[in-house]
Length: 180
Image 1: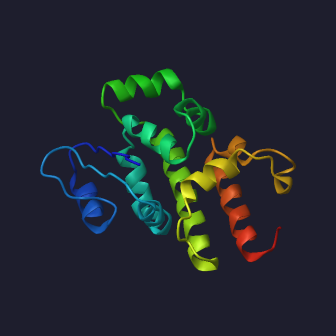
Image 2: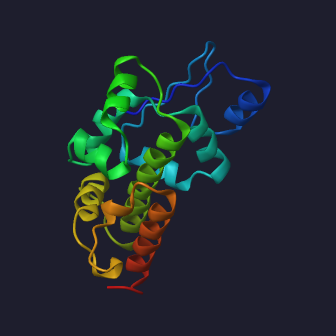
Image 3: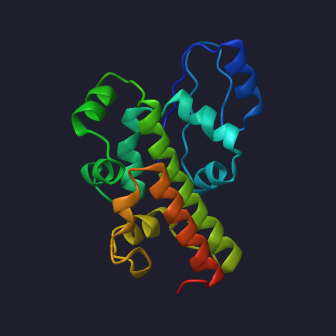
């Protein structure tokens, strides 16, 4: 999976935050590139502190990286856009122009990546993660009706931060056995 994050020219404030944030690499020009390629990158986003994720969101997710994210989840680009409430025409235009998603849109994408990291951590803590594809599992699980959610699919809640928090809480309950 490949997601690129481009940031504007760093200000003193963002340069300091970026220097402290392991999710970023320093750049000498106006762009900071980040290319999550492994499940460890999802876990790093999940384990990052709130300030690191905020900086990531404010920096923006490159629209052209969503195709790789959809592929990691074993879903289509259209399904991913629908899941996250992203307008296809806008995202396609931004991808063609090598632009970032808006802060609000980036927040939803980072939230989904964080959930994939959470799934991976659960499996690492609870069992054997060998050959387990957390992104694929999460992509499939999100599409199945869930009794704990009154029969709706978790994917229907992914377009809001609050909905993503509900899903994260449900995953935590599944790990603890509080809801089976």
